[in-house]
Image (cartoon, rainbow, N blue to C red; front, side, top):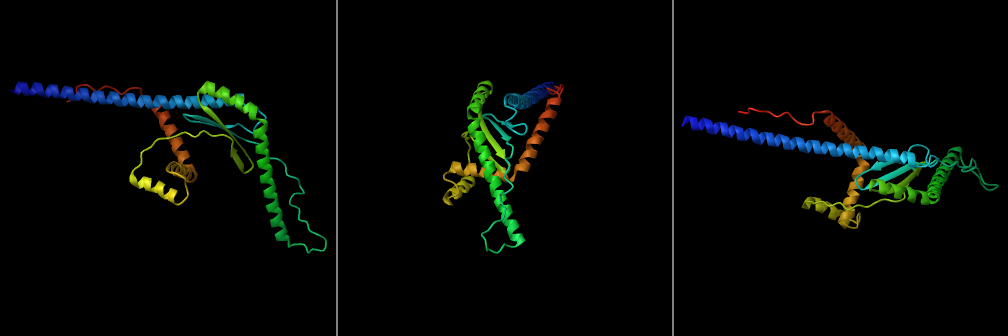
Length: 243
């Protein structure tokens, strides 16, 4: 009887050991798969940035274009040279016989007029760039779509003005519990959003605006985790003789 018990214990230990080995192998395979996907995505992003760095005309932007890549879309934005506003813009003037305004008031009006002129000039420069480069951007986007299998969105900034010319809207499915749905319904009822999907997009935009620094740090932390994983062993050692 004792022999049978000992035999049974040994068999149980063997089964437990086999189960633990299986769990370790499954976890290792999943971790390796995630690391491989992350490395592949990062490699593709670097390839896309390099391709656009060589493909975009040098005279388009004042510096390297910002290229952002996700699973569906490539976003290309760049900074345009700021147009020069005439020195006479914002000069205080008045009709003959009118009393000149105080110096502080005249200076404030001059600054306001100058800022408005600079903003209008920046908007005009972005509009000009969009129209003059339309055909060439369409050609580059078509080449990138064929090469990388993603749509291309364009944008430009000048001074303190920024504009996206095109953007891809991708449906994202999600499941929400009642408290979360009530948040969306409140936004719809208050007129902030037209529908639940519009309200959800509004929440995402709001989070991105107010948590941009945190999201950037989170992305950087994830990249560091992926690098550390890539440097580690590919498989975990197999432990034998488990009792």
